[in-house]
Image (cartoon, rainbow, N blue to C red; front, side, top):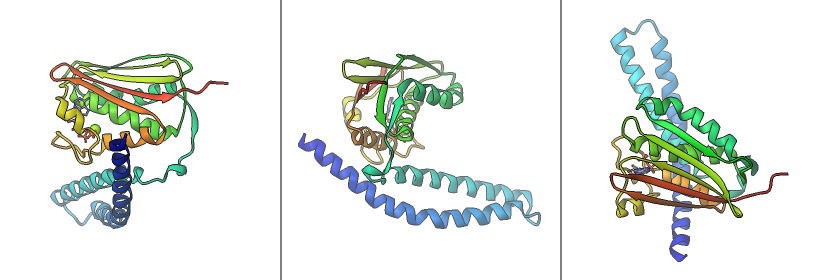
Length: 229
Ligand code: ADP
Ligand code: MG
């Protein structure tokens, strides 16, 4: 428990610090991108030059993405509104969003979701949580594999399970999950799960990973159920 507390304090500090920096970086990035877009539309520049502008704009978009991820960490607890959320609705919307991403590697997303799984959470953050975890599952999967998403009520809790048949992780790798900047991907930020763990904790939930190298990974998320009436 003490360790958990320390982890939570550390996350809060990382959040506050990086949010301040991220905020300061965002404005100049927006200005520079605005000029590049302006040059890109200027007929006095030739095509090779315009390709370079486009590259620069792309890179700045990446910077923007990373900053957005940082900024979601920084909102103080009370700031997001709590909603009564139907887990099935959100899973449907998230799998819809990720459908074409999955198709790129011929992966399927399969869902088994019970009706009337209601939780109290901020919908946008809940979506972000699921997107990050499902994206990781897809990114770990070979071509043609499936990612299964299950949700059901278990006593007073709603349990959501995301199962992949991907590369899996060693025990040490599982232990590193959620550490800022921990990523084994060449283009990863290593922020996704830090944000996820933060969201789960903020709404009083729990998250567990179990994994087996070469076989796949299961993420289990649990939130207190609310009665739908
Ligand atoms: P990123 O996706 O940017 O690398 P994350 O915080 O989302 O950052 O994930 C951190 C790391 O955890 C990943 O780089 C990957 O090595 C590992 N990981 C997360 N989810 C899975 C999974 N389902 N299967 C295998 N490895 C995973
Ligand atoms: Mg990720």
